[in-house]
Length: 214
Ligand SMILES: C[S@@+](CC[C@H](N)C(=O)[O-])C[C@H]1O[C@@H](n2cnc3c(N)ncnc32)[C@H](O)[C@@H]1O
Image 1 (cartoon, helix red, strand yellow):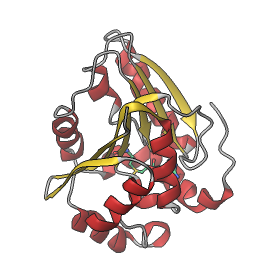
Image 2 (cartoon, rainbow, N blue to C red):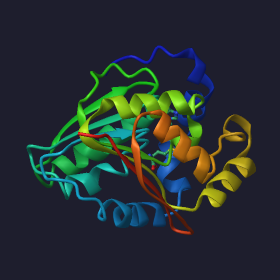
Image 3 (spheres, rainbow, N blue to C red):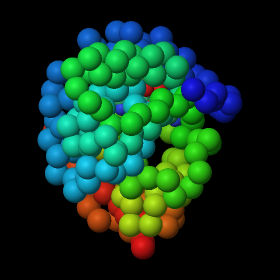
Image 4 (tube, rainbow, N blue to C red):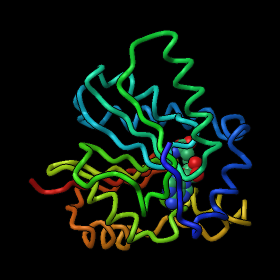
């Protein structure tokens, strides 16, 4: 695994490191169900190369494994090494049952990833955008990682209001971590050189979809 060198995210990293082992028991069982419903609306090709940003315990991986064949690639990146360990356990369990797309686990702050630009057909930023301290920097980096015509997905399995309220309630290291409003999100993705396709904000689904031009 590549090593994360960005000290600015140390507090966030420590927060998630401490919670990684119990994370799946802490979150709603609906998270994976709703996430699957969101991802299955996307036209992901079976050989797509996908970056799972802030992969956490790897909840997205089994969903992508149902879409991708062995030509597909998932790079699961997270700043928390403990979260990546949980992802590895999940992937190893799945490997006993079926063939999988290629996968790489990477410890990295998404604003400074050790990845060449124009590498991915999809960059999926699931349930982690509010935690980025430099939201414009993260958006610009994610945009650069897309191949021409590639798409950025920023998604949550709850509404923006519910996510922001949750972080305010939890407080501490994530207390001020907010998902910006729709006009600010549009500004962030357009400043990153992407075209905004859709922004849906509903009780069980937040989905921003933007693409890089050909
Ligand atoms: C709320 S958890 C969500 C995890 C997973 N995507 C899910 O849906 O369960 C947010 C994740 O983002 C990661 N994260 C936060 N800031 C990050 C950054 N700057 N770069 C990469 N990962 C980050 C955290 O370590 C954590 O695992």
